[in-house]
Image 1 (cartoon, rainbow, N blue to C red):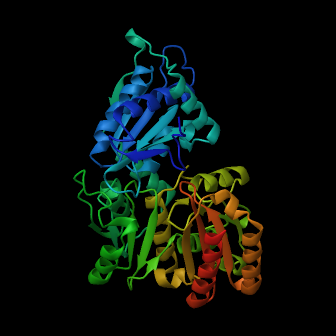
Image 2 (image 1 turned 60 degrees about the vertical axis):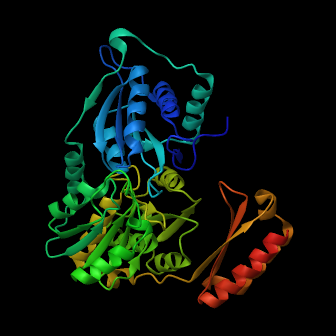
Image 3 (image 1 turned 90 degrees about the horizontal axis):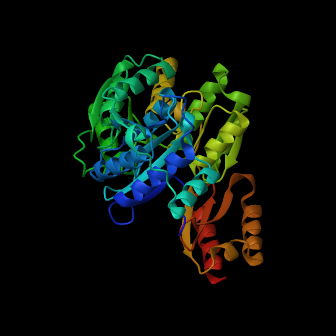
Length: 445
């Protein structure tokens, strides 16, 4: 069997590659691996949530059936953001949590994300053990009173919003914001959290019907938000994806503020307040060189990891750091969340505006984004090409030419026979020329 788990759980086309039968098996195997031995008279429990896509109803039912059939009680919290599942897994002392979502992917896709006790994402070993149980088919199926029960929690979203208020208590009174909910899991809790903090909130794309999630809106399609911010004369705009674990922003002029710039703003704020542990920010190798330069000028250490928020999370836990994230808008504040939390990120960003009285554009100017060119080159053996002496020599030559005002990153794709060639430079023409030259060489190896 090919490996089920990717960089963020199990994902696929709902009812084709990700079927109800597969969801049933994944849930049963996860229960077997992650559910601790219950205390006398108590069963282990699992928190189950989903985003609003139609197939989530089917998959949620299958996951709940798999868990209860394995002797685990289900705490069904309905349609909520992914970070709410992580938070409530810990809050309810559950042995595991399951979020059914394909994040920013289009509606036909779906996915299953699993959290261990405490709301932490699984490591490779736990995923491998779950896959081993699925392959073996040896899943315990108790009978009678030992079968799990399902408990529906109607106010889970309210509990999550209360938590966000504690995590970011700064008043947003006087700020007018537009929030693009992507017709996703943030459609209720996002506007509610911003309004509870005192902001004047205008919500767009907040009418999920099961079919319209991420459809031309949200953090992967920013046009609607940019226009709405300008049209309403808002101070800022916030864009979420389907499961609200990421946040991008728009300033009052309609300019996009990406995840790197958001991390720069938060890192400087937390450094000033003493909240930035070891004065260190954690980001991935895909973060723009401009972030590296900005952090160096601010006296902040920037540690980099491989691509994927799971690697950021691993580094945060290992070093006990307090801020990390990705250019895509996954930002993690470990003191308050065990995974990327788009609504919390936005509250912290808006709180910085309220605290300083500065516009988002002024705050984001702490970082200047260098032009970046990314070329995907199709090859026959990505691993061999990436370490070919001719390629490594060419990369070294480009790095010498760019010096400390540019950067090269050659990275094999995690899923396809592609090598990704990324070049950053002080001007777009130079970045494009060097990226094209490297891509041509890579393609010829």
